[in-house]
Length: 215
Image (cartoon, rainbow, N blue to C red):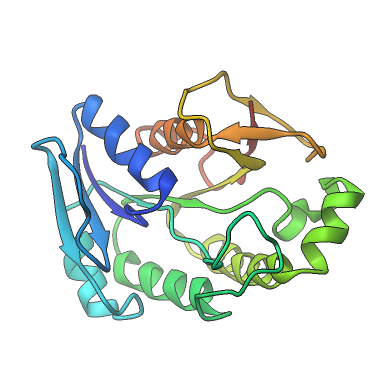
């Protein structure tokens, strides 16, 4: 399978590259800046500065079977909910719109990484998490992710939106569970998230659904 991956330089994206290569897939990793490190022969890199350029996105994605997006809003300190947001507040809204338009006439598999608590999953979030998130800059990012989700859901593409609970820094793959509750101590490793993203890209599992996952 040929996969186009957005957000390849992030921690989840790097796990997707590693696992996709081990599964025998070829990966076109779309990045703003060159990535350091040694990569499998099946991994190529495509530089892109404007993630709202439909024509360039169309050209980048034209030969892929599946498109995976691990892009998300960025803060100066990801562990601090009140830290400065580095990306525009409408970045995911505009990027998702452009990406959808670039593949709108295709039957490509589209898998977007979002977060538990975004959109209609807000109601399943622990009250403490809800208070912290929506009284900090995380809430601003969640609103943008919510717009991304709406854009994707309103398309006729073969999409899946994956909503992980709190991301763990552990690199191991652990058993994945589906949940309808985002508890205070629910988490999932980035390696597990990458595995789930690839499982969705390879199949019609959770087609036009928004699974919430944890370990």
